[in-house]
Each structure stands twice: as C-alpha cells, then as structure tokens.
Image (cartoon, rainbow, N blue to C red; front, side):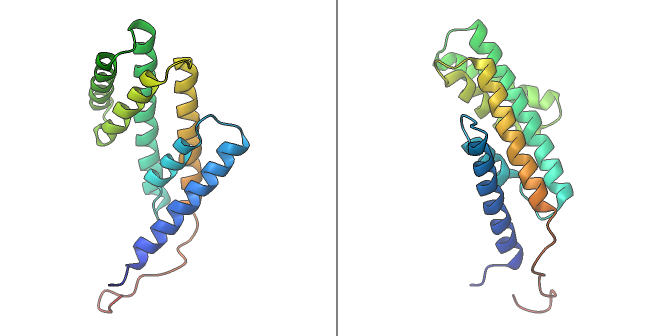
Length: 158
C-alpha cells in the first residue's frame, strides 16, 4: 500500500516544525519545550491559511485553558475536583468564544496548570502560551514552503 503524497508532505512538515520548535524553545530556555512541538504538530498544514486558522483556534483555546487553570488555582485548593471544574469551565468558555472545535485543548491546558504544583500558576500559564505561540509560528512558516511534490492526477494511481 502506497502512502499518498499529501500525507508524506504533511508528516515531513509536521516533523520539521516540531524539531525546529523544540530547538528554538530549548535555545531560549523555555521550561517545557514539548508544548511548542505539540502545537507545531497539531496546527501544521500544507496551506498557510489553514495553518493560520488552526493556530488561531489553538491559541485561543490554550489561553482560555491557561487562564481558567490559573484563576482556579488562586481561589481553590488543588484537588481532583478543582481539576474537573477547570476542565468543565474551560471547555464551556470555548463555546462562548466560538472556538468549540478545540475545546478539548482548553480543558487539558486548564488541567495542566492546575496540576502543576510548586509553580506560580500565572507564570506557568504565560509559558504555556509562549510555547504554544512558538509552535504555531514555526508551523506557519513551514506551511509557507511550496509543495515539493505534486499529487498525481486523479486518474493515475499513486
């Protein structure tokens, strides 16, 4: 079974974006470079316009989750109930801000902030957003690279 050209190109672009995001995040000493790589993988597309749309949604959802988690950490004790409330509130806020396509991202970002013991929640929220923005920016740059391979016409097998 042959892998379609589009899938190969997307996999190569996502891996390059992830590696570059990791390297840049490590160079700047960001606390958790993995979040830059994850963002790059999630939003990488062959189209800069689609990457921009995916990146915008990802950034809004991450901000909602990070701020929800930080606020709840400041007013409630850390517990499984606080985590559950953070996930619930963050996911519902995504519907309010019309980014329901990525509401899961808000939920898990909120949980990450709430569960991170011993780290200032506002600093952690800011770092998650910074790492996410880095991954999105790298993914967008990679999406602007022209396609190196073209798909064969529909009547020809791949």
